Structures are given as C-alpha cells and as structure tokens.
Amino acid sequence: MRGIGTFEVRHKDLLGRIGSLETKSGSLKTPHMFPVVNPSVQPVSPREIKEIGFDALMVNAYILKKAFREEVLRKGIHEFLSFDGIVATDSGAYQALVYGKVEVSPEEIVKFQEAVGTDMGVILDVPTGYEEDRGRAKWTVEETLRRAELSLKVLDRMDVLWMGPIQGGIHLDLVKLCAEEMGKKPFHVYAIGSPTQIMENYLFDKLVDMILTAKMNLPLNKPLHLFGAGHPFMFALAVACGCDLFDSAAYAIFARKGKYLTEGGTFSLEELEYFPCSCEVCSSYSPKEVRSFEKLKREGLLARHNLSVCLEEIKRVKQAIVDGRLWELLEAKARAHPSLLSALRKLSEYKLFLEKHSPTIKKKGVFFFGSEGLSRPEIVRHKIRLKENYAKPKGSEVLVLLPAPKEKPFHKSPEVVKILAGVGREPRVHLCFYATPFGLVPMELSDVYPLSQTEAAPLDKESLEASMKEASAFILKQKYPKVLLIRPIDENFSALERMCVKNCVKAGSELKVLRAKDAWGERTLKRVVKAIEGLIASAPSGNRLPTGAREKREE
Ligand SMILES: [Zn+2]
Image (cartoon, rainbow, N blue to C red; front, side, top):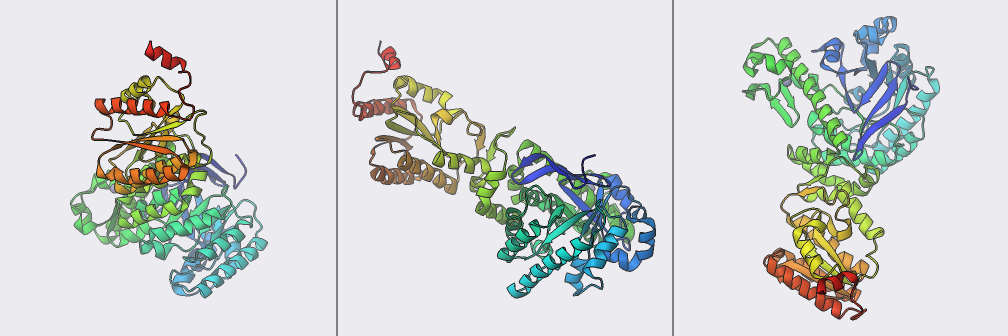
C-alpha cells in the first residue's frame, strides 16, 4: 500500500478528478460522498450503507463524545458502528454554528478523534455563518487558523488524515486569506467550511465563488472536501469546481420529511405516482405502497433510495470525467434548476483557471449548446493560442474569411476544395473560417482537436457575436494587406462586416466584401475565386511568377 495520505489522480476534466486517497482502512476512491450517520437516530444502518455501495461514511465526533463516549472509546469507532470501511469524523463545528457553542475544546475533540481510531478527522473550526458581517467573519477565519495550529500541535497518531477547514463565507478576500494560510499547514485534505446555508438557499453562483477562491489559493495536489453537500443535483458542479469529497446527512433529513431525491431535484413522496428510479427500493415498491407504511419503515426506504441516487450520480460524474464530458453534464444540470444555470454562467469568471488545469486532449469531441459553452476550456484555449502563439503562414497576403462550411474538417469540405482548386493553392491566399464556437479557424488548423470534433447547436446571438469579434480581431492582429470577407446577407452578419471594416482601417488592410444569399452556393464559389484572383493581381508582391500549382491549373 502507498503511504497514508497519498492522493493519486487517474483522470481529470475541468477541475474534477478521479483519484484515490490512502487511509489506514483502505483506499478512498474519489469523488466520494460520505453519508453522515447519527447513531442516535439512523434510518439506515452503517452496514446497509456499505451494502448500497458506500465504502466510507462520516460521523460526528462531538455527538459521539457526548452520548456514547465510553462505548466508542472501548470498542473503537469501526466496531462501534459495525462498519469495516473508512470512517471520517466531524468535529462539532457545525453544531456550534447552529446552537451557538459546543462544550468541548479544540484540543479535546482532536484527541478524542485519535483515541477512537478515526481514519480522517476534522479540527474544531469556527464556521462563518452566511449572514455574518465582515468583522465577525474575519474573526472566524483568524480563530479557525489559530485552532488549526493548536490542534496540529497535540496530534500523536501518524495514521490519521486531518482536514483543514477554509472559512470566510461569502467574503472572498477572507476565503483567499484563509486558504493561503491553511494551505501552508500540513493537512492531508482541505475543506470548504461553511457552505450549508448558501446551498440551502440555492445560491450556487456564490458557492462557485467560494470553492474557486479557495481552490485557487490551496495546494492543488491535495483533495478538497465540501462540507454539507448532499443533493445529487449539484455534485457535478462541485466536482467540476475541484471538490473531491462531500459529506451530508441530506439523504436521511430529506427522508424524514418525506422527500425523494433525484439527480435533477427533489420530489415529495406525496406527489409521486411513479418512482423515476430502479434502485432496490423503487423496483420493489410503488409510491403508494411506501406511503402506506409506518413512519420508520417509510423513512428507511426513502433514505435508502436517496443514498442510491447519490451514488448513481457520483458514478455519472465519474464517467463524464473519463469521457471528458463534464462540461456537457454541467450544461444538462443547468437545465434542472435556474440556480445551476447561474452557477454555470459564473464559471465564465474563472475560465482561465479552468483552462489552465483541464486536459488538452480528450477522447471525445465537444458539444456546444449555447453561449455558456464559450467559457469551456477547449474554446478558451483555442482563443488564447490564436491570440498569443499564432502567426499566419509565411507569404500570405490575402486573408479570405469564409463562414464555416457544413462538412468537417473544413479544409476537406467539397466547397473549400473547389475554392482551393480554383485559385490553384496560391500560397499568398490564406483561407480562414469564422465559426461558432471557436471564433476563427485558420484552414491549416481545421483538423486539430477539437476544432473538427465539435458539434454546435444553431447559433444564439451571444455566441455568434463572440465569434464575430474573434474573427475581426484576427484581422487586426495578423495584418494582411488584403482581406476578402464572404458573408451571408442575413442581417445577423452585418455586425461582422462593420467590425471587419473598422479593423481593416486600423490595420491598414484593403477590404473587399462579398454578400451572398447562399454563402456556399455554386455561384458564390465562382465569385469568390474571381474576387481572390483580383486581389492577388493587385497584391503587394504583384504579378510575380505563378506558382507550380497555378501553372498546372492553367495548362
Ligand atoms: Zn430509487
């Protein structure tokens, strides 16, 4: 076995990762949700939780200490819970947030966690409440950091992993400060400390801010935990933002309230005619039958279903990471609830960070659904490369800007082949395509991943405008003596023409515009070839000797 605390990543997409974290009770496969169990009121036993497929759970050390201290100390936490998987313990900090204070010191609670043999522990931090003002929030950060220092000093066992919580709440400068400082301390896992109220209020855009601010200021080689995330409909978002672990009692709390979780939202058992699920519970009973059971049985069944659906969603997220389709999954989720769409849009503010840490080559192409997709790493990366590293082919003098042909890769589409044959593969002519979502695609790159592996839905205005902006900016950057723009007469493309006019003036390029009803029609192609010939004839290099290819055509 590798060393305890080792975190190995096998697959990545966006900031999401599939990895394994070594604990003294085995490898914890991530992403993972720890079901939180409460030994006093537990609708599903730890053993059943394991049978459903969870190898690791979490229990509150503060509650254990208060209610079962002697027994847990005597048996050890695994035997006490009758659970032979990985056990993580929380510290009671959340209870302090809810009830005002807890009757235990930071040192006592970490020593207790060590004594009962936990696999992963949490220090007693001070959560920043959602509505706390900056002054109080600052104190929670300072106090959490102080307690982290204090706790690390009293630890004895080398085989327990410790989580360092990041506080600061919605005050992002404090989150940053806390992450920077906590990141310097030797924790095995870092954790976003106080998102519960934000999640309960569906403020997922704020959650994105919190997670990413922490993520950007923490060591990236350590796992990141998100406290209290237990609704499957936001797992994809949290994982995409870089969370590897969650814990939640939501499966049980919702069950107690008669709520049925799905990957897309929550239903009340009362309103269900059918169970949209095939887990053991849902394939054994109808909603009507479950409603007829006495409370405890009903709760147990709902909790078991809720756990199954959480596990299923984690598997779905994992498969999306393997496929490089996590963004597509986020887009699908964004249609489950408007707050998730806000969160997806929020990601645009972090698109450079996402781009930097997302894999460059993937197994599958890109599905582009709409303007939110403009922030995805593949598209951002293409634009950065074009802006920073690209130089037009040597000797090219005439830029021909064409709309995207129907077939991919563009340079092999029959219409493009016709133009190329028509102008005799003239090296002074450079064909480029303005194509959503990438903006501008130089012909010689049209086969490079993912430019020809992208399927785009019919364009929305925002995506079209973004692409046109990229295309016209290219004129300014590359400075061709002559530019030929072929545009559909469709009013939507007038803006492109205006932008090209403006940038050609700035770049000192001569611009010719061809407007066509059918930009790829037979007649247009002939006009394009003729226009290109006219531009070459008057190009700066003048009527120099035709190229070999040109001679061939004229034979
Ligand atoms: Zn089910």
